[in-house]
Length: 442
Image (cartoon, rainbow, N blue to C red; front, side):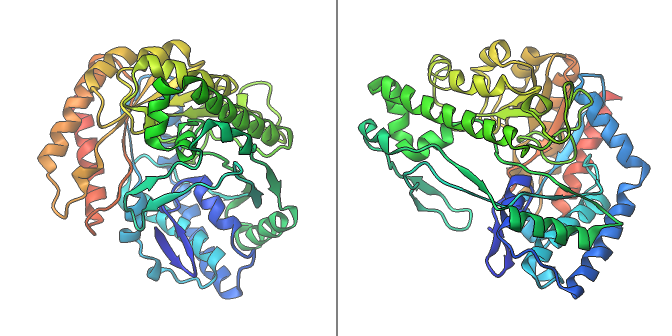
């Protein structure tokens, strides 16, 4: 976990908006005079960086890329957990918890822009979420092990499908009073420098299978495809209905926010896109068809494509059908199911090519019709002294095939657990990948 003191922590380095928003919502909505002075100074620096001409160039590049126009490959790295090595919590100057989260966000942005220098766009927006509480599924999840980045076992809390009557649909309650106080505190700190606006992020993905496994257990879930298919269908149907109800509630209550801007979208780069929000569009009540949708199913990588098509995809598709554009995939190689996804996922635009995928086969399949979102294995930057030649060869080989098949390509470095304490690894990775991109594409 990333520790900022006083119990403030996050397993993504506050890189994913929905994780940062959860952490923000748990804090008291107040900022001291001293912390406000520190935050406004950092905000001024972020604003200066956002006004550089390179920011518009990057925005335009992402938008063209997502419209499947010919561009150079986009390059993006998020050190995630290694942010704690780059920016230890003890380096922060603010004392209040809320202020420290905002300070962390802005100091990261400055490091991204001044040192890492990938294709991240520096924005002048300070997102502020609604504060909320959400009930669970009626059965508490249980894991054994874990700890700081440690492995853990998911325990079955639904050992018998006869107990499905115990499951309950989740319910969200907005804390309007605290939400208004939080928004007011943000305006007080940042007005005149950054654009303060309510911006919610309610989910990681509409994958469903991670929830199924946390209820049923990993081994049971896989065996159910043979031993209890009716029970598994009933569970997936419940989870799909729960997600649909949740999406309905968020839309009907004006709680959705656009994701075609500068926040991380799914697990593939940023959402900058001129085709969204599309029409009709009401800024006061964003609808899913104005947004990117996203799904994955990392847990089912050992399933056959036939089992995936029977037990997983049918429950994801009704959700994805509501969105204007869709992205699919995370760490799982999609090699055996890419044909299904291209055929069945509506308005599929971006596809993840994981470190375990066949990069040539995926390039041949995706061609010019989908964004080729390639993730390089993060182990290559996890050593104190990285193998630059290996990184260079890997990047050159991948770019050669994306160019051969005309793929709109982006290369990501994500799921980073450590840089072995060496910030230079992230910086050098960007430099090497960019050099190889220019070598192949120019």
